[in-house]
Amino acid sequence: MNIRMNPEEVLKNSGYKLTQQRRAIIEVLRNSGGPYTANEILSLVSDKYSGINFSTIYRNLELLVRLGIVEKLNIADGYCHFKLTGENHHHHIICNKCGEIREIDICPFDELLRNTKLEDLDFEPVEHKFEIYGICSKCKDKK
Amino acid sequence: MNIRMNPEEVLKNSGYKLTQQRRAIIEVLRNSGGPYTANEILSLVSDKYSGINFSTIYRNLELLVRLGIVEKLNIADGYCHFKLTGENHHHHIICNKCGEIREIDICPFDELLRNTKLEDLDFEPVEHKFEIYGICSKCKDKK
DNA sequence: ATGATATTGCAAATGATTTGCAAAGACATA
DNA sequence: TATGTCTTTGCAAATCATTTGCAATATCAT
Ligand SMILES: [Mn+2]
Ligand SMILES: [Mn+2]
Ligand SMILES: [Zn+2]
Ligand SMILES: [Zn+2]
Image 1 (cartoon, rainbow over the protein chains, first blue to last red):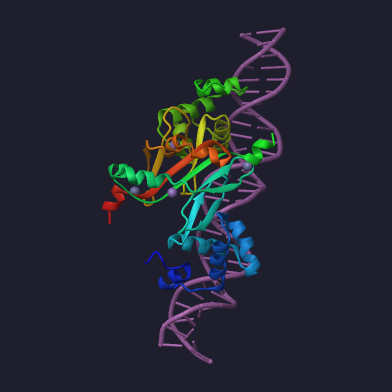
Image 2: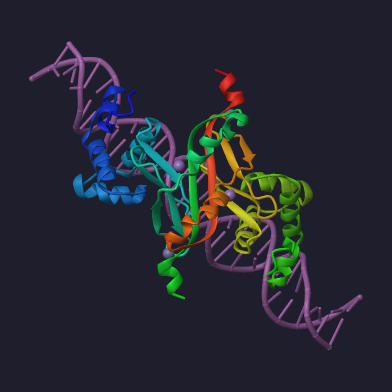
């Protein structure tokens, strides 16, 4: 499964059908930064493909995660957030007040691999999460 | 609010009552590594204080988080996990197969602060999460 | 175009977490 | 130590994101 295949190709290549709904979901994730909640994705997709159902959103997000196309983030706000995996790997800073999610390019994992400390862990890493929570500048100014 | 106060002192100092249930919850968190789900904490506490209710667990965990005594982890398994904040700050490697959570001492945040990259972010960090997901040695051997 | 299968929409179920409310407990005060 | 006030608890019901069963529909190889 070449890493350079696009989501549509991965789907077909894995024996899944390229439905209107799947196209729309991928399209939305591609054109918007994210990460978005299932709710937000439903709204965005509804613009392109009205009538799409919540369970379709959830079922497909799960499939896309399973295929490695989409990444699922468990942010401390009670919802799952989803974004396209891939080219621009990054992490997030999240405001505890307003909930704004901003991307950062700093990846602590690169550093880890460089130090080969992982060898000692007796563990095969697949993915990783790094998030910084705090107060954004807008919210700091407010009080 | 001195960082050297113990949980019981912080509670009283903040005007909250030191109930049997709160004592038991803190006791359990102190004597077990964690992080634990609310469910696991209910079981552990029930040994000490039988009859304790789920809503009491949740309400107090929320309070303890608010007071900075407990840390809430959003691990990608659908549950919230809780552990005592404080002395031994660390992160986790989590097995995608069996769900085992193991502690690691590597903290990417120290590194970040050293590089002063955070100054540019215009953001006041409060806490951070770093987790590595993958396959543990036990699960790797199984297949 | 047809048929075999995968996928969808809908509505109902699930399950962790939250909430309202009356009874019980903590603790400052007398 | 007894009293009174205010907080906290237990219980049961509500919430709400996510999941699931099933019949109807869409996709795609032929
Ligand atoms: Mn990274
Ligand atoms: Mn850390
Ligand atoms: Zn903010
Ligand atoms: Zn494992």
